[in-house]
Image (cartoon, rainbow, N blue to C red; front, side, top):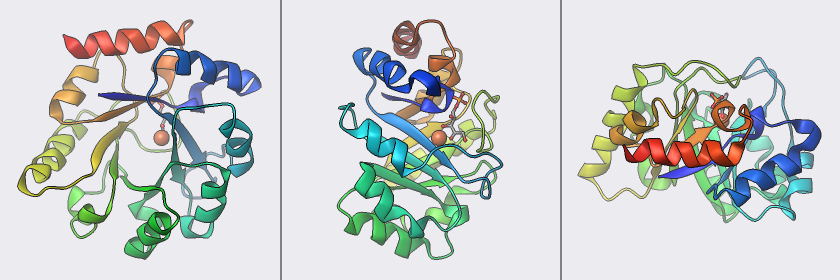
Length: 217
Ligand SMILES: O=C(CO)[C@@H](O)[C@H](O)COP(=O)(O)O
Ligand SMILES: [Fe+2]
């Protein structure tokens, strides 16, 4: 199980210090939530901030684009330092084309699904992508409650991996804490995004340790 702390819940006034804490604690990826105020009702950061962080952070940048028309900005995010770019199925009219644009840049491509979007929407792209991001809250904000019905969705997607040699990993994002991490990974999640349960605590390093311990029980 990989842990990808989401900087959405970090203190943007001392962002690099917060990131250094989770890097030292052994975080696997840095999850960066990009929001445009259109696709989701919130605005966060763009390529400029990612570019500034890139040469100071060594773990891969997992960029979650919650923006309309993401194809217009892929190049900018790649140049800024994204290692994985995930676009929302709901934001892409020509999803296959957008995936190819990301892959042609030489980085990994992921596709995210809102809670109400069935996994079947990805049937004909699953063999092309590196990651499926299942939203377990409605995208837009950190600190929301995990939607329990998403456990079946994770299991369903995980079952499809058993039928064919797909390479994609399952990333799960929203409302994950030490109280539910085990049920999420048992259902088939490979990568856990956690924002408030890491950066919302006094000690992010301890929070990561506790997530890993809770996953063993
Ligand atoms: O993409 C999103 C929210 O839209 C997430 O990455 C959140 O940042 C996760 O935060 P928590 O639910 O873990 O607090
Ligand atoms: Fe996210």
